[in-house]
Image (cartoon, rainbow, N blue to C red):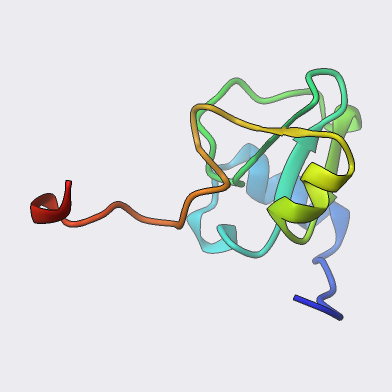
Length: 86
């Protein structure tokens, strides 16, 4: 995602707080107070907006010192594998 530009912060906050599935893969959300990064669709309790930072990729969040959320698993591919593969 070299050269990828993030949407405006207000738009990303709204998408994250509303768990908007159309933004999954567009950005990664990290919470400064917990040190965790998530997908925009994460079902975990939402943090205060002033504690949220955004990254273009999970790799960027990892390099910034955040760890992956255990609920939404942002390091795994989106979607779920077919039943026969599980």
